[in-house]
Length: 96
Image (cartoon, rainbow, N blue to C red):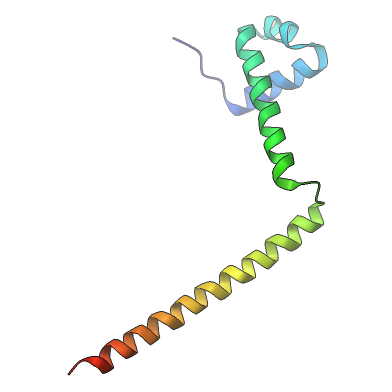
């Protein structure tokens, strides 16, 4: 049965792999070399996805965008509540 590693264990193993190489780190930690390489590949893929999503924007830009989106969401929820109330009002007025 394959050993399950925690996210913290993987992170520490990858940190060591960055310092001394994946194969050496795997040997030192008793981890299968293929496992170490797959973790490294997955980490690089995740970093690429994150970089693509961020698009070179600064943390301040992302915080500002997040605030704007949260405000838009708040406004949209408020609009939905108003429309629900209006729908209820008009549905009652149509009943004989």
